[in-house]
Image 1 (cartoon, rainbow, N blue to C red):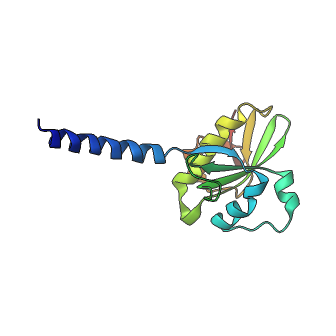
Image 2 (cartoon, rainbow, N blue to C red; image 1 turned 180 degrees about the vertical axis):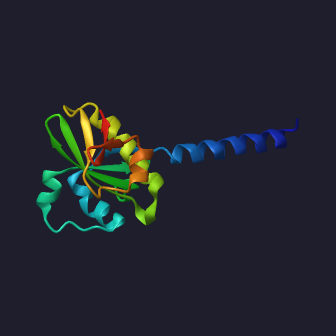
Length: 146
């Protein structure tokens, strides 16, 4: 093998690795300073700041990007004892894959909370997205055990 051939092979591996790293996303609570960026990027606007205060908002982000970059998806949860309620999920441009990612990461995150079950409010998201994220039917809604 020539040095040129090896270099080309190494470059191909590096670009695959770089793509993999940039695809890594994590879920975190939305910091107050990011509320405007998050809401604008996902096409919703908060007219009442109490909405952010009463709900727990989680965003799916690439940790390598700065805070000026919008979240890939967001989910809102109302906590209450042993049950948490999924109020809504938003992802840009109908990206159901991102909605599923934020829900899966949200479920993992909520396992550290007192809640034992996450129940989707009617209309929180479509049935297909909820099922792909591990939710199953429960009393006319969808839920996942934590």
